[in-house]
Image (cartoon, rainbow, N blue to C red):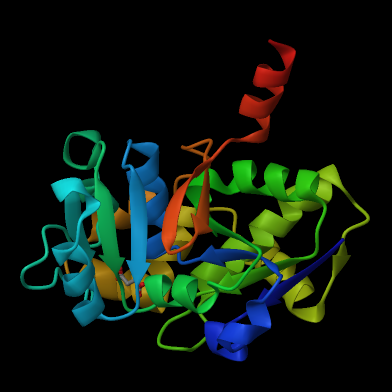
Length: 251
Ligand code: MLT
């Protein structure tokens, strides 16, 4: 089993992902929002790569239970019900809802990886659940760091490094690429205090400047949700975790 890390989604085009097992990370804040929303009972998340498409999709069926969420320049978009703060995606607001999500980097990275055979969504909040699931799946993995405007960012790479570190605890034979080794090393150097690390990143500082310091604290929390968000045919839903599967097979 081999694990690679793309330090920016622009390192690959859409067709690269055909047949791959892929994990997308956007810690500040798209994948943290997706994990929070699904963990709090949202029915599904529909990631989109343009605001126009978000508007179009929201005009369609989905049983009248849709919410438009996301950001432009970190702020809520006019006409959208929700911004891109995990705090907004509480149980009361999202339970049973289909959420159409547009964000500057994260939702676009997910859409870019849409041809993957398996496509998972990871944040610090569900890191161990994803690590365990990938090791059981035992397929080569590509981890996509959503980055910032096509550039490298520290927070997504550190999450990739932490994910790989957890996987190595379960299977020390996993083969790493240079980018995977670099991510593991960055996590060793900067991944001890996630809250501090996030506050010092470029995007973290921008979020604090724009009044979103509470988001940093939430996005920094490890393993708050034992869930595996899985993208299939344009929609992200929950897949059963390994612990749920083993409980089922025992009963
Ligand atoms: C993104 O996708 O670029 C982010 O989630 C941006 C943000 O929420 O600040």
